Length: 319
Image 1 (cartoon, rainbow, N blue to C red):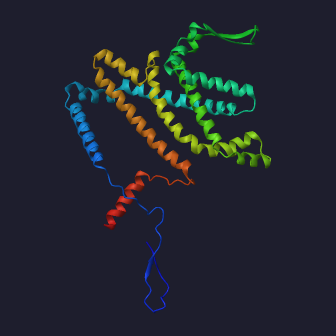
Image 2 (cartoon, rainbow, N blue to C red):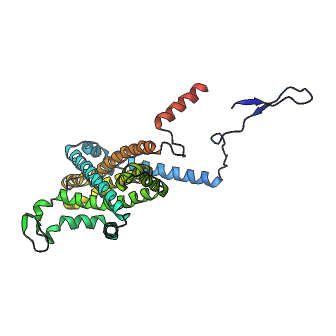
Image 3 (cartoon, one colour):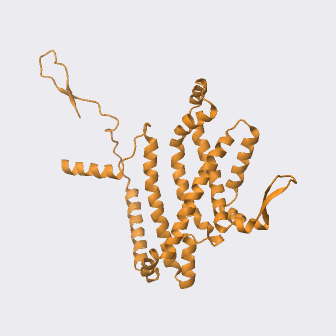
């Protein structure tokens, strides 16, 4: 911390150094931990160690089977299908969510009402029910037709079972369900932007579509991105529900193996480990994306792992 000298006193005494006021980042408040925190910490540590020991020493865990099937072709194919479902359904859900959010904020009552009903229905029914519904759509509509509605001529007809395959049913359920949640996330981000900026843009002659694309949505991204990252991780885990349609994603691939080998627990551990690996990578990506959109905000950005390592090296060199 820099020092400054005070002006000379009338008695001719030498000037005394005056310390600058500490900045906000240098102020630290010392907290004294209560004894109960130490007791709770010791109790949690003992329980965690006991649980870890019981797992590692349990012969029924069959870690050799976990190692055998972790990189097996069947499991890796299921993992690839899970990633495919997550990516396609999430992109479609974001597109549906943005469109629905704009419709909900529309001054046209019909559009806002339809968007509100869509969000109400798909957020109010379980995702598993939606997957089963789309998978059995042929029981309601045996054929899908293209033509003029209300008794007009039909141009083309398709068998529903041919069009709505297990993959298509899974994508429809995941994307439509995700679109309802993304609509509320995007709507909240749009409403977080000050209304005065939209009015100023319109005063400059910008049209509504351009105002939304150039002014509102870029600022709303700071609010939209963090929950969107959480939704991507949630989508990855929710994709396991499509196993009810016999879609060979990660969980169903593990089920096919343990139904053949009767090694249920090791194969479930394999699937869980792969889910943890992918969610960890997605969390790291979310961290850097949030830093990208948080630039220029008043909040201090958290240090990256490389910045933490660099700070440790500097401290070690200074010591």
